[in-house]
Image (cartoon, rainbow, N blue to C red; front, top):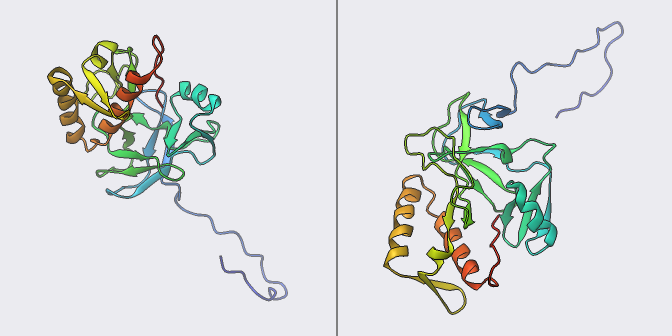
Length: 223
């Protein structure tokens, strides 16, 4: 901002503040037909543009902290490296983005977290992302209401104990799949590739390893 120097001449009328004729805020937060409140574009976005910060106000905890694990139940935490980002939900941000099976944006966990456009978003269009949740023995936990033609019916991809029985952990961190599980993962992988979300398979593989290495009878919690 440029600061004015000197004084106004004697009798000069005081300057009135200039009012912006349009909003500089690129998104708005309002009720969504998908679920709850959503994020809507106020201008056009092109692929690669950052749409909104994931959590403008947040705190970070070590992923192993019991408080971080407890906070994961809210389903709005974000795993970023070895930290978990916990949004202050009194401040709206990208954490309000709804899931879609054909999203127009993606969630990036690096740094403070951000929502980035992946295909053209028109003014007034809802900004959606792919959640990529992986659950354990809860196949119908999160019903999807995105309304897309290719909707999978559920947001989460579930790995059951029966699925895990078809995998073997090698060297404590790598999994080998039999033909049954390889076909199931390949089918999900084709869907993910079609929407540019193939990196979600890494979460699937990591969750499978955690299921195989967990104490007997326990349930794996994901972020």
